[in-house]
Length: 178
Image (tube, rainbow, N blue to C red):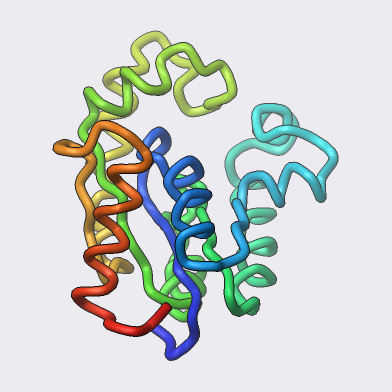
């Protein structure tokens, strides 16, 4: 964690990084940035298309470039892509950018939230539920490695209740930071 006033959200797809992040940014008077949206905007293409043309490795290289730039900002709330933590360089960038909050969710919760979303390239498989379990198994330790705080969505049903929980934890752990 840096001494800056940034907040970085990590976690799996469907954990609420974007929806919760927008609410938190407003509450904490931070500028909201979503690394996936920034990447799409700059590339002029959506993530599924980038995956189709460049594969996951091409997408991840672009993701690292965007993160390197975004993490130099101050006064931001950055929602990262679910797989951003898979790269050691990205984990270093994320850790150095500010307070890192891991929004955790179960495989069942994620599946219920994203099962109809065709914009999730890693779920375009025969059994997306099993793919989610595999993704969580690999990434859970990486999310925890970078996190200053872990907030579970298991008891919080709405983005606003998640945002309130994050604010309460930040005030408890990092008083007067924002």
